Image (tube, rainbow, N blue to C red):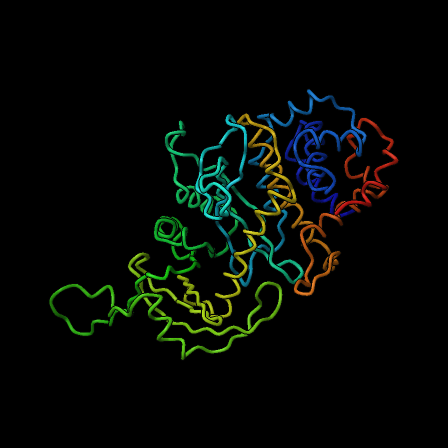
Length: 429
């Protein structure tokens, strides 16, 4: 209960004189985390009235959910401060990606027909949805990596933008720079091949210098060159920028496969043996030397690259494997927390709800990092040993069910707790 009191208290102080709004914010955030009902506004209102005994009208709550006075900028900075030891081996591991949030209403803010590369055969390739660009922190918590959302924004088509158009790459760069101004650590941005290009790397290197590096995946047709030879004698012409062309990532994979070695890496929650080979090359798309690692599995292979030449082969594989946590984080956000179930359609209501859901995910993982021991996995699986996101939510639910929860959030209109809350919370998660 001390952990819950400390985290909630730090967020409530950002409301300053608006104590009532601060208490309602805290109750709403907890209601989203509790795995009892959908996070749409109607379900949250039902939780506040039924479980917590708040006397609040429907009109008052819906006004709050659409309020422009919630200080999200200060709240996110306060949330960042709550992250203890955010670095991994002296680096801040940032994962960037985008996802779509399918909707049905034609007037919902941020919606357009965006291409869904993960669409199945019975689904339309262009889904009516919101496109969310997200930046998260990859942090090792009790033996497993987790992705903590730090910043996000809607990607809008240029024809639908009124206040200045930004591409996904420009949005990603802006979010990384904002995070770098708060966390004074060297940055390693981990992305898929779509964001792993000079459009992201060049402006970041220009703004942050050698403090920022990139880790991503090569496309099969990417050309690699040897490092240029150092010119020892004076002569005509400028020094060469690139050495001899070595081939594409695909052709080099077949040549170097016989030189692969076995490495023991921490990947997807446990130690694994992988076959890999590495080398230092230079690519014209980034114009800097990169360390390339080819990983072989049966008849398949994948090529990873990083601009940080100090990283070992094991670290490159482990950090890129941790990038998958932003993909599972999208599932936690949209399905478990329920951000895709919102029925709001106005701009302020849509953004407030998504802020709440993103902050609920970050809050849950921060709570897990403050625990003395690792949470116990409730639903055991032969291939999964570590705890899940739902296990942390269950621990928060048990903390809310305790008698001294009133001391955490004393700003309640009804001091008597509903007698059904303990029985309902037993069904959680």
